[in-house]
Image (tube, rainbow, N blue to C red; front, top):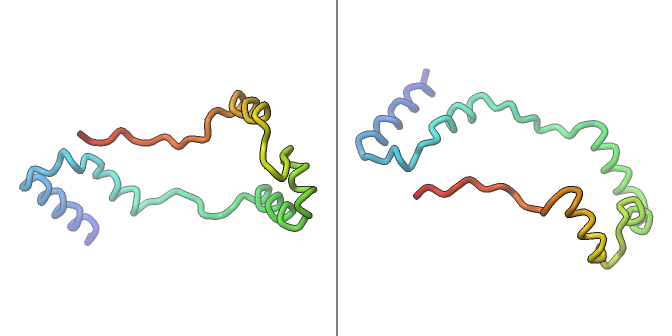
Length: 95
């Protein structure tokens, strides 16, 4: 009940101050209340991470097809062809 009152009060504040165009994402409140994000690590990934942490650095680099100085330019190009650039998508900024 309190959550709905707070949401309604905040929506009214935005409407009265003409700030709604800056806060078009009111669904953020809904997502905070009913999160479906799992914070646990999948078992397969956990086992892989533990195994990598326990092995010596040379073996870990061999498993990752890397070297101590990093990937060569050709390896970088091959990885980029397979998986693309290492970028995070960003939302378009509000005007």
